Image (tube, rainbow, N blue to C red; front, side, top):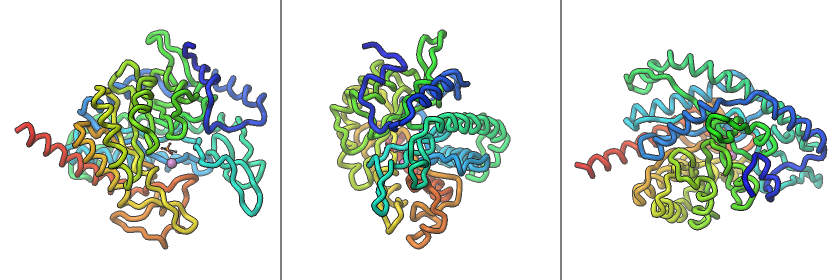
Length: 420
Ligand code: PEP
Ligand code: CO
């Protein structure tokens, strides 16, 4: 069967909400289908071109933002803080001599979460799990937890405002860049910054409605964001999410967790990037510090052996979650250890370590532990604000950027001394 924006509907779809009101869902889909697109095709092509430079080893990708965006905590200050943080991390990498940086935020659409259990039980009461603000509400009562398709319209509206804010900040940041560069010890000239948006393409009703055909390129484009990715729990070869992503022209990310073997990875790449086009596919490993050295080598070996141009990036967050009392947290030392293993494995396998994928916020939260302003277990309750997974705060995210800059710098030295 040939691909259409709705061909995913004949495939099994994991992790999608069960909407009780089908009529309301259809009305929302119709409204979204005529709503303004959130991104421009020319900007998506620009990201593709930048990612093609990552794929050929000339640039590095930083992707980061909230685990889940929230309706309640939305504000221009928050968007600005995420924007500035990504910019500063990029400046740290460039000051370290790491070359070109591609800035990609997890923002303006990151409102839906896969869950390990579809229900949650508290004191003998069982309700649907919270799946992100685009699906249902976090409060533990039936009304909040019932999936409501009208939330998709709210998500679209917030994404639109977020993108308008990002555009305004990008123009202003151009003026601020010399200051940001000086703060990280660099005197490079300011160039216009492009900040792109990305989210997990989990809610396919929303994605389909925002997918449009372009006569000039004769391709379908998902105009909900610049890049979308498939989560580790929705990457089934014959599933709905892979079907949807296979037909759009945007760059696509694929989370690769410990249950993915090399054969299945190659089959997924065949589905998602049959043309082997640099900049189309970003493989995002997320194994955990304890597992990365067991799983990543055979996957990288397979893509290298088969001559695949897909970018390799590392998400050192999702395999490193642990529970401390009633809190989920992540330790900076596990995060840095997984990133560092990623660089070692990439060097051993002759693959470009292309990027990092982080959950982080510009706010001063206490959700992950460790870092240069060390936080310990007693600090967790102070500002534990996330709606889903624990995020790096600003200082911790800058610590990770500094660690990445060191690793990239070491790699450059190795390459230079090899060439000498
Ligand atoms: C995420 O990125 O928030 C996420 C759920 O990741 P994964 O699909 O890798 O578990
Ligand atoms: Co997460």
